[in-house]
Image (cartoon, rainbow, N blue to C red):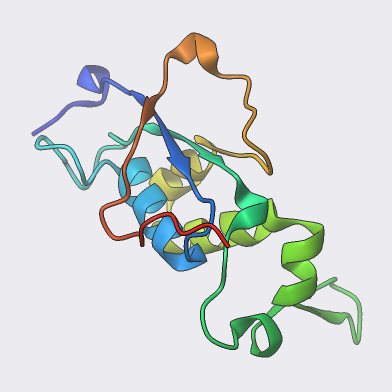
Length: 147
């Protein structure tokens, strides 16, 4: 069993260009939770840090761009708001990806700490060269197919 003091965190980069949103979110959630490690312990936060690049080039399969909605409530009477994923991906693709990743993490303190370790960027530039991140090849993602 792994102890909290023995956790060694690494930095990984995932290139999300032309890959499905859910497949990238699954890989990021696995890395954030630490399930790729041989010493994974469910009750210890043993995950790594993740940098996701090219969030603006991520795709949704099928008719999800028209049929899927992000809904939230403002707290006021009649304050239910909804935005179509087509518009959300055009305005804030980072938020759409962060919501997908957050939904795949546990709803407890481990999940809240894990979602803080993901950094999502629209383009290919990031400011984490000092951490020496390693490129992560998605196990479940489709191959890069530029359109």
